[in-house]
Length: 320
Image (cartoon, rainbow, N blue to C red; front, side, top):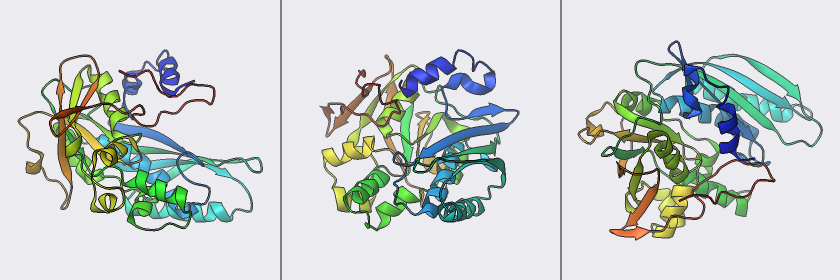
């Protein structure tokens, strides 16, 4: 069963307005923004990743969802699975604590369970934020809106690739894979002006398609405009293949925003050093992505990003 099929089934009874039709990464109720992310060993982190970095990552990926809603963190609930002698969990909790302290996120509760010996670890966190005004979702984009990316693409995917080749790999890209940085302040600055906004976690192209499906429009994206870091370019290059790798790799925790054409985001109170790039435009038509490079059409990759599915489900292949 695919992730999309599960969500479609859940929509049959997740009908409260707070659920936003399950078209978003967060629920909104009484001025609070709530999100929950789960990370699993072998899917989101490697068995040999330092447990402290796993703890940091669990907090950071949830805070990235709050960043995309412009919310201020106010609390978190932790779901912890325990296994072995407790050494791993002790280091993991140190990473959770460090991230919570860094982002002023109070831990206010949670749950713990023991795993069977040898079972992969699955860890969850519910992050709660307070909205300061309008909370953008994925569904407000309109033809003519400009698509912007806050942050860079491909760094985490390249870091993972390096670790898969060499478990002892180090460097800035490995650090980004293990310890992503949620763009909370940038999200708070952009959210009041965004027609639609979400974070990029499964890959730019698949996440952009989700925004288009919610908004009911198409998009033209200039692959040459995708923001890449100097570290990524040094390792992977700046050619079309490298850019498509960055557009589909996932784990970026950048922000994708649809902004009105007359809005210049450089006029907003963004944190010093924020990287923001216009990558495309929304257009009329059924939800679809058209890519170009150097003014020429580029074929969409077979794999747009990561979609969770059960082992019996076929790979994602039913895209336009």
